[in-house]
Length: 250
Image (cartoon, rainbow, N blue to C red):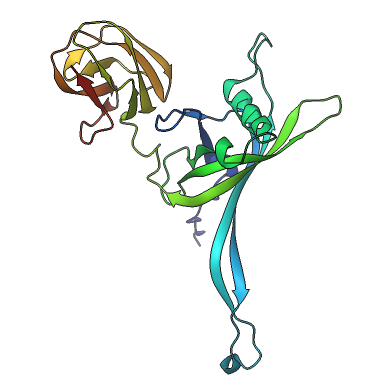
């Protein structure tokens, strides 16, 4: 008699990826948080008793809102030389320190939480502040327990890893003259392996891939008008629809 094969595969918790937006609004620059040992997205519902006579003594609740947070155990890391803290780890520490003297709202930043392999149905975006920073102590590896407290809605998004075509989300600066020269920061997603950057079809001969979400390009000679800035990788070329990638030339 033939045995029946299973029809399910248990997913691994480490499939989830957490990105941190280190740019100043309205610019966007998401970078992956490396060194995660454990991460949990926790959602809780706020309720009130809603029992009425017709429930005959049985409890009933009404949901009046929700809260959310991400709890992370992080391997606090430096570069190989030990001379500098990982830039996103340093960013989180600085944002936590800022809450001693400033409001939580002034220390907020964006995060993305999603399946790194592109699986849909479990991808979110929202704003948080660093509510807790707890070091491990002892004489072993240094780990830090961090609480990223959600501020406002947790929004469903399209999984950024589902389609690896580059996306341009903002430019800084977003305007300039016709002459060649000057650096333009391009923020977005899926820039790794970029082979070309263009301004309205004019190729930028010099550009640097800073990270998967940040490219710095030297502006080429341009004619006046609005130019769509695009990034090309082996996965394709970024879309030109919308105003996020518009560079105004005057």
